[in-house]
Image (cartoon, rainbow, N blue to C red; front, side, top):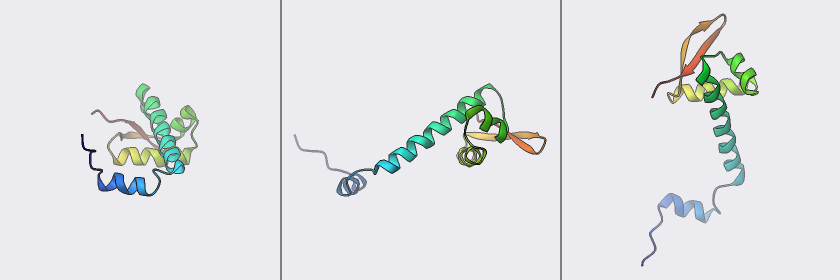
Amino acid sequence: MAEKEKTPLAALRDSRGGIPEAVRDSVKEQNRIHKLIKDALKSSPMTVPQLAEKTGVPSDTAMWHLMAMRRYGDVCELGREGDYYKYGLTEK
């Protein structure tokens, strides 16, 4: 049986020695933080400081990930609580 031809991206990745470990670790950490945020928001909408406290992630990091998740439709703003917006999971 003939070997399946590699896609250009797979061929490039192989020629460069695969995916660098630093990139794999970065993606793994990003996925871990997104899961923490999603799990925290399952119980109720929260502000960034509340999310940071519940997840143990620094506020600036939580905000950065939250904005990325908002951009891709995973979370949405659900009003304000004092000086902060509350965020909740988007129903998909």
